[in-house]
Image (cartoon, rainbow, N blue to C red; front, side, top):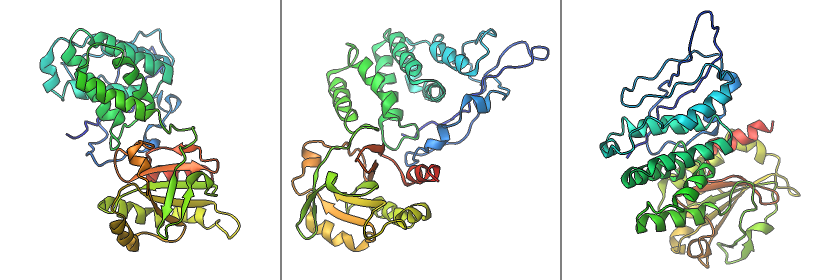
Length: 342
């Protein structure tokens, strides 16, 4: 199932009261995205100060009325916080027919999580928890919203993928008695995995084995920056992404600073599977310069769930102390990171 992305530049404005007597809200259709679209961090970096002078028009969805924001609230971010708090006040949670109407419920949900991008984490977390309080009136609707958060916040290919905001979702629903046993086990597993290797933490160390049989520890690898690239030979996308990384002009400039005595940027390519001959054969089509190719001989990555490899390729960017800068990221986001350092 595809993602509904009527992503909106939420702009809540201070208007000249001699011309306008109330505040309106507009959600502007930006684009549709398929399951393969990767989220760009820059897409959500726009601040309220950049958009607070925009004039908004109420979105047209008669089945989902938005709350009226009091005119007395003039600060842009405060208006967004108010909207997030009262967003679902008029939603009929007992109307289970709306579960099968994504143009109403799922679209309203997408609009909602876009609003959350503009407010501080603590307010977004409170809003999410309050949403589930409101949804408790109907177990089916409660489960539906849990699945929507999973789809948009947890699935790696989602343009809205946001594990940090998915944490309060999991913390809330796992404390309730509204989930089936199967769903509880699934979300409990996700909670376990999502707390591993979070951005800002030190990446879990592991042993990797080179093609010649030598083994080394990831933490012992000396490099100012390290790209962890988990892939499998059966994955055609892995090969194409590897080529894109190797041919990136931005990363090429960073790698040009590599020398005999210093490594500014390296790529550690790790195969987590068990078909070593196939992996060895595939190396002929993989980049060589600045890349280290290895496999997980003991299958620790898979058997002990050291890393949450939801999809392949899975990419991390680490600093020289092996702290995670970007998790489950993309070439685009890595390039943006290095461009911001210029």
